Image (cartoon, rainbow, N blue to C red; front, side, top):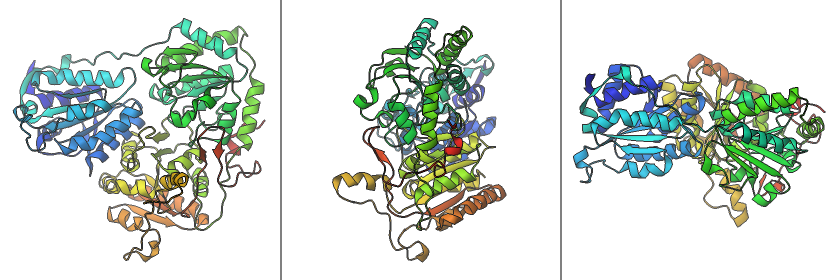
Length: 592
């Protein structure tokens, strides 16, 4: 055993657990922890400009890094409260993330000391564990438990709060004998999976709904193998997008009220059986449950037992890790294939392929100001299959999910349930840390972009290159569109006459000057024919300068994006593609 400060023990544990990527801001109450990181040297730290930004960076890193856990660090008081939105975003989407805060001395916690706040109580609703560690000897065990909880069952974030005197205290600790606690994940039995497969093969038009739990489990290959063995189409959820590549013949489109494909909704409405794996039946996926459930049977497989039946009761529920369930289903499907007892779904697959080849929204508009649909058409043309997209909320994210193409797991990174404005830029920086050799492209409306625009300086300081496409209509576009139901347009315009930037008059903030002032490169596009060359220039600038590159696209101010209140009643505001040649994704479809 060795005598050391608790913070030295904590940092040694982080290194042994493989959590070596941190984002945060130092402060008086967390300085001992920073001194330990400096002494050990095994943890890379990225200095954020705002603690909420740091939490989103850690979240983005965890989403991108395929198993590694991002760390967010801050001082006492407001640093912890600033992390709450980041904790909520990670908790809502089942993302492991460790937040570490400093705290006032233990003896001062009840005295309303400077920057002393009960962050444990504040954070508990949006974490798997929130703990103010009052005894120095508990520090190793608390960190050990944190990693077990973050990785077990439904993943999620943890917050550990360290009073400064606890950080400075010395304990006996031996990192050589430290071992991570076993990870606990439920596993479906063969009997359960046989029943699920029996129900699927009894159907005429079955579908697999692939949720984010498949990506969390690293089980995308098993999903594709199962779909191919059964010859059954797959509907990914927004969080599961990429689990099966968009160009795979069995990828049947996304379903929902907003982030959906016309062909996906139509195919779903023709189905008679659905097996959902690692999904949570989010309301923007299902719409009204009467419409969603009518005429079909359901199997729901989820790692969290209390998730089953939360939204509606399936015909069969199975508590299981998605990877374990898919491995078992693949084994059973192989057995039945070899025994030649699987049904022939080729006719059903051909119907789905026909819809995928024809039911599209038009994207090739030549209007000036630019229609947003054209932006996504040009992004598809300019960015390759290795591209990882990052987005969070708004008409930009909804239209992007309707029209962009994603070709693998962890290539669409989206704060799905929480949807916090401002998440995109800092999360993209975390994604770059997690995917240093891939092209990262963020997508924001102007309001999301302005929320945490200061974090661009982090990308410039630490050479974290990515492309940030900002579609600027000088509106809170999604809120403006939703206000149509109230017959109003109230407090949603961001436009003003900018006396320092006449070229942006009618649109307000000069994002080009702001981005350049923060050390980045920036391009403005006003003509749709210039989009392709602008994206090419952005890639060149990113490679040359190794900083974020902003591509601002000046949009027409009002474009209503397709959405509705039921999956069988989507309001298509714009023209639809009339021919296969008009359909931008027809090249991806398996031609019938």
